[in-house]
Amino acid sequence: MTDHDEGVTTLARQGSITFIGNVVNGVFGFAIVMLMTRFVSPSVYGLFVLATSVILFMQVFANLGLPLAIDYFVPQYLDEGEHGKAKGVIVQVTATVLVTSSLVAFAIAAGSGFIGNLFQEPAMQIALLLLSVTIPMLAIYNVLLTSYYSIKKLQYRVIMRDLVRPSVRFAVTAGFLLAGFGLLGLIGGYVIGLFVAITIGTAIFVSKAWTLLTADLELVAPKPLVTYSVPLAMTSVVFVLMGNVDYFVLGYFLDSDDVGIYRVGYMLGSGLMIIFNSLSPVFKPLIAETRDDIDLVEQRFRIMARWIAGITLPITIILSLGASSYLAVLYTPQYAAANLVVVLLCGAFLFNVTFGGPDGSLLQGMGYSRFVFANTIVLFGANFIVSITLVPIFGMEGAAIGSAVALVLVGLLTLAEIYYLDGIHPFTRDFAKIVVSGVPATVAGAPVVYLLESDLLVVAALPVVVIGVYVLSLIAMDAFTEDDARMAAEFSPTLEKWLPIGS
Image 1 (spheres, rainbow, N blue to C red):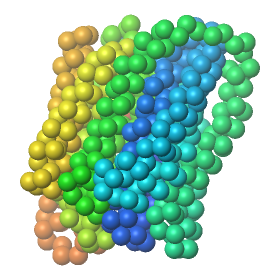
Image 2: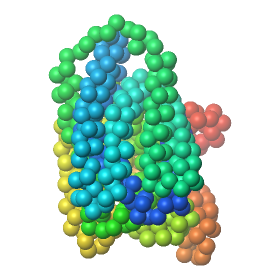
Image 3: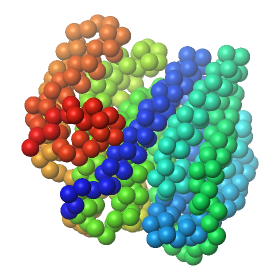
Image 4: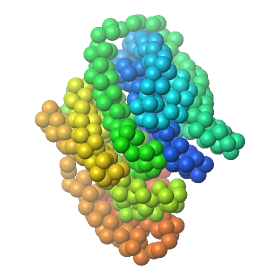
């Protein structure tokens, strides 16, 4: 094990960049949903959620998982100085997904009437016809994202994904809704925001990766790309279906307004993914380039697990305790019906993202794509079986239970598999300190919810109390390490000096 792993500095620096982007994207995301829930009814919003869920599911078939090969093979070719092959991977993937995505888009347009009848929502046909054009757009969008990951220049991803797309979408959606376009306004904002993001993202990538793109093209053998990507393509199919199966099941058994309310609760609970999503894009390439050095991989895995757990845990406590208040204040009181959904999902997402995330980024980086595929089958199967069993009985809470069970189960599988395959695990004394520090924070936060009658006061006071007690607990337990100091230095040298590091 090295005394100073430069990968930790890279993880911290690039993770901090993506974290800022994710915060901005999250703010815009919540703002867009707040806008939608105030200008359209839950049934119209639920219809839009169902339509976009179909699009997001079908776009996985469109790209065949090939964009995921970019941030696996390109870093290796670049590390070996083979820029022509790195360019070849990007070119081959782009050409292939353009063809396949166009075919899938045509299939969606042709079958839009059948899908609308299946969910007993006639207006869904129009929504799918208009949204079908986003299938090839999403394919190119994903190619750009993974290309940024592969060269570890995530600031460009932040510009495209976290700044341009949500800001344009918010502005256009607001304009359409103010003009009274309703569902068409939601669709228009979605399509135009995506188009502008791709246009600007392409221009930035061409400019900043000019050396790579002007290298002599050297096509690579397609078999390794396919061998790596096909299991992940099937994984992505199941994973995206898992992410949307709740909406499909709810849309089939219940009304579209239940879908809209559940979507808001799911969005708030899945907000815990922000830290994982900040570190995962750079974590996978860091693991891929050093996958033969098991000690170094374990060191990086333990650091990432601590960071994710340490930052996500207080957010989990805040959202779980104040779910009803946050739903009522951020959206409207009718969405407070999803409070139990938020509580269930918060705990499940905390467990899952700490140990590799729902997409198995650690296993992907180690090259175990077949294990990722198997895990995702379990993820979908457990979610679907539990949801379809419990939704008719418990309504939207049944769907939340299905998602929670699946996320926890896959987290356990990931831990077991990586330990069996390479003897790696994240459990250390420093990790335990993070977990234990959450106990007093929870105890301190509970009275805030029960004693304050105003939802607005709860929303304002709860984070102050929980985070304050949590930080004091970390200090009391001497939980900060040298790696934490290096991460803090990437944000601010002053923060590094103030961070209490034990001996």
